[in-house]
Image (tube, rainbow, N blue to C red; front, side, top):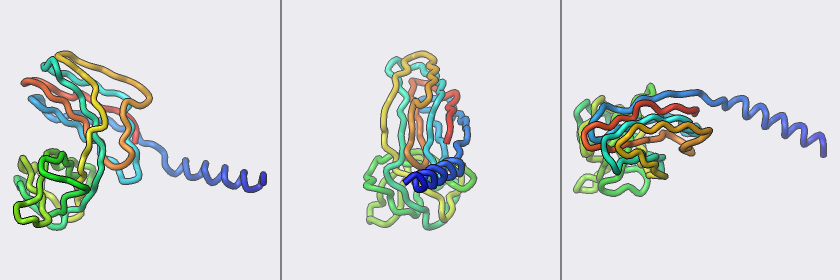
Length: 190
């Protein structure tokens, strides 16, 4: 019995050593009515947000924390400025579903909403055009809000061992404002 326990303990220790967490910091998108921060993570990585600082000018503003509930892969390349991409809608997506498209090199191509095209073709029609080109193999994630934290018309700084955790894949943090909101920094480990 002790022999098996020692072997199991050694295997668990080796497994944990192989999956060391990496620190990250991400700044939110520009200042305006919506600021977003995307933390890219591999399919087996868990994102843990441990610090966030955000500013908003809207009394009812809140940070929303989102994680993936569906994933798909882009099947045809597209140019920057595209509003239609070839890709089955991930998960149980429907019109107006929040999505994140991630390309190689941990770059977020776009966040926004997508919908199936009118003919039911395996494409996503985006509410706003892509900033960068999309490539075959880039990932599309359907996102779901897991929780919110009120900010108000103020600057909010939070620090904790875990403010939010995405069980796999990317994490999306959004903040709304009247004209001047910004996610200043998001930090943690993945």
